[in-house]
Image (cartoon, rainbow, N blue to C red; front, side, top):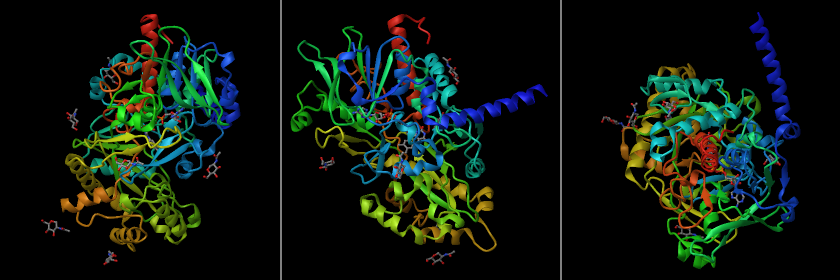
Length: 580
Ligand SMILES: Cc1cc2nc3c(=O)[nH]c(=O)nc-3n(C[C@H](O)[C@H](O)[C@H](O)COP(=O)(O)OP(=O)(O)OC[C@H]3O[C@@H](n4cnc5c(N)ncnc54)[C@H](O)[C@@H]3O)c2cc1C
Ligand SMILES: *[C@@H]1O[C@H](CO)[C@@H](O)[C@H](O)[C@H]1NC(C)=O
Ligand SMILES: *[C@@H]1O[C@H](CO)[C@@H](O)[C@H](O)[C@H]1NC(C)=O
Ligand SMILES: *[C@@H]1O[C@H](CO)[C@@H](O)[C@H](O)[C@H]1NC(C)=O
Ligand SMILES: *[C@@H]1O[C@H](CO)[C@@H](O)[C@H](O)[C@H]1NC(C)=O
Ligand SMILES: *[C@@H]1O[C@H](CO)[C@@H](O)[C@H](O)[C@H]1NC(C)=O
Ligand SMILES: *[C@@H]1O[C@H](CO)[C@@H](O)[C@H](O)[C@H]1NC(C)=O
């Protein structure tokens, strides 16, 4: 009886908390460091910081929160606050943020030279404010290869999890995928787990049961507010170096505020003060080049004074290709992002997502993660995916039969693509997207794994579980598929037993799952402690340092790395006893 009562009390408390959390203003008042506009920055009032962190994203927030326990930290984020922005906070608005291409949007669209439309975060909390929320750790092998201290890794993941990660209530479409995967032989079932294990599992999520999003910005609640200054709409333009001695070292940064006015912020005199770059896989190599660290000929072309010639900066960019198939169902399915995943031995990961499609509300129908409005135009070959193509789709949307929205997607992503690309700057403006090439499927093994993934999806679709969702007396699955193909939602491989046609399918329908990484690789741009090679007092801590994307989806490990590096730095400076 007592425990039942306790449970009810907790539920009421939870509802009250959620109510408060959804009130952005209240949330900030509770325990957050002040989020200030960049224009309120005053150099005169700042004594010099122990750490200047550039980019309040997935890694930057946990890193700033941790370092602020003992040191003075300045966190500069080019975007605004996620709080009180419904486009960020609610699961059902996932596709709205990504489709918003205004300069105020939390998402900055970019198109790689491959023609695949992609997105970069521009908001406090970074990618965790615009992503699909799936939370899952890296494999043990990944941790070993990275040379991380497994014990500290084991302490850093739970630090993130207890603050912002939830177990999902499995949506019907996700449950169907789980059962279909097992029936198709992607086994064993590993249950609800954060661990990366071969077989099928259900992972965590940063959305709570009400579809309210928690983000890396929430981790700032664990900061020491007396030591941390957070400025929003603070776009760093350049890192400042002292280049008079033998080895250049950082002294501060130049940033512009929301009115375009420039400010300088400086590190304190301590030898161990550092600038730490956490601008993500596009932003960090871009910032190094803008600051004079990169390939000499690029710096000359851009007329940027050379600090250090390193041709590896911006090299080795890669993005895991994603391909998907829409499975029409006889009844509408509830919207879901990602909850279940199949980890195949061949190295492709199978996930699922469903949008919203109900005949009573056809205006609001959309395909969630695969929405054409956000550039996931998989029925058009990459080279033809233009703004005009998106607009054409939007205009014709009301003519698409509602059956074409009724159903869900099964997607596959390949692990550790061997295809590599590169990044270079178009100009010296920090607001311009760099010119990025990923070379999807240029390596034959990547193509082979895609074909394997699509064949696995085909097996899943033909399992008993899916037959129940797709078969009907009046509609055969083939008829439903035909409707989706005619409505230009689906592009079905013509012959799944013909490898050449499946390879063509992989190339023609490639889209992104936004797990791009690289550009500041370990041993090429940074050392194993993420210190930039050849200069002092500068590190890069984010997805740009990864050779492969961790786990099936990377956010857990990027946040973990922010916490991990914060703890590692504290322990190095204060001895192992440092406990925060
Ligand atoms: C649409 C989408 C869906 C995804 N779904 C999932 C998922 O379900 N699960 C999962 O695990 N992963 C998912 N990911 C991937 C994951 O979110 C990213 O890999 C991760 O967030 C990247 O972290 P980061 O720290 O490298 O960069 P970011 O989080 O992007 O952080 C970089 C920050 O730096 C700021 N910045 C950049 N330049 C400057 C500058 N010059 N001055 C100041 N600030 C600057 C940016 O505004 C940003 O806030 C998804 C990503 C996207 C975009
Ligand atoms: C949310 O997105 C819509 C559609 O793009 C836009 O009109 C609105 O201004 C956005 N809201 C916020 C708070 O940015
Ligand atoms: C870390 O945790 C994993 C399980 O999550 C465990 O297998 C491993 O032994 C742990 N490592 C250390 C060093 O504690
Ligand atoms: C999981 O699959 C990979 C191949 O992708 C294999 O190398 C590894 O040994 C497998 N692990 C287990 C525990 O079976
Ligand atoms: C972008 O890169 C591609 C491929 O490397 C190149 O062909 C193109 O000229 C570049 N564009 C710009 C604007 O630099
Ligand atoms: C699907 O469409 C094609 C071409 O429009 C047609 O030939 C075929 O008979 C259709 N199949 C079914 C099962 O309706
Ligand atoms: C698939 O392969 C079988 C056996 O090789 C062949 O008979 C059949 O025609 C193929 N189907 C398609 C659609 O190519």
